[in-house]
Image (cartoon, rainbow, N blue to C red):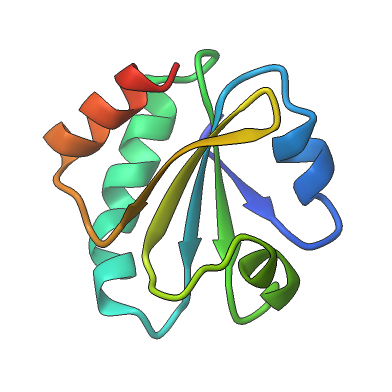
Length: 106
């Protein structure tokens, strides 16, 4: 499936109402660490296809969502299950560490 482009208008449907657990990557085009983890997030989205949904929120284009969840630093990764935040990680993670977080949250 790859990643889903999340916006202020589709966030509720794609994340809060999702039947699958969701990993949301809050990022911005100018963010160096965000660019570093982007390929890892994409790889894991494919690896965990059908087990978890992975979405990306550009905080500059969608300030309402970023504000709603109090995003102060990026990248921030949030895990949602049944519409609730289960875990939040700030900063770039290695593929191994992110994979462990995904397994723990599905």
